[in-house]
Amino acid sequence: MSHQPDRTTDSTADRGTDRPTTPEPRPSDELLRLDRQLCFTLHAASRAFDGLYRRVLRDTGLTYPQYLAMLVLWEYGEMPVKRLGEHLRLDSGTLSPLLKRMQSAGLVQRERSAHDERSVTVRLTAEGAALKERAQGVPLAAMEASGLDLKEAVELQARVRRLTAALDAALAEEA
Image (cartoon, rainbow, N blue to C red; front, side, top):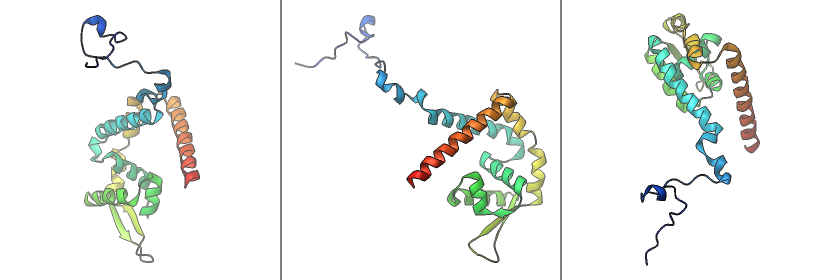
């Protein structure tokens, strides 16, 4: 005797098909739905920003991670690679190849410290500094594409910063 699935509660039984439908989620499963995950919502927004910045950065020749590094260097100037990584929240394994590509493109120079060979300093080249002018329209283009007005963008950024601080604190507690 083969076991046949009970299709009396399956909505496909009414339509005369043998293909079962996905059951409705149970109330206890509601929190496990993808569309309920804040982390996924932020991940999806991040991926959308990546795509947007790929387009708006095209004229600069920068990738999005390179643009972020350039923002820090335009704002603060020469600094140790370690400090740049702290600003960008990137480890050296990610940052070093990024800076190597930027150096090959003539945007930055890296130099070992004379006082401490383990420390590497990064600075803009004249070409990297001049690129700032071509990047002036990038923030406005991103803001316009976001569909947010300035007040909404500032409020959202403040909330995301609070979220980041809370998550950092939670991670620090476990360390």
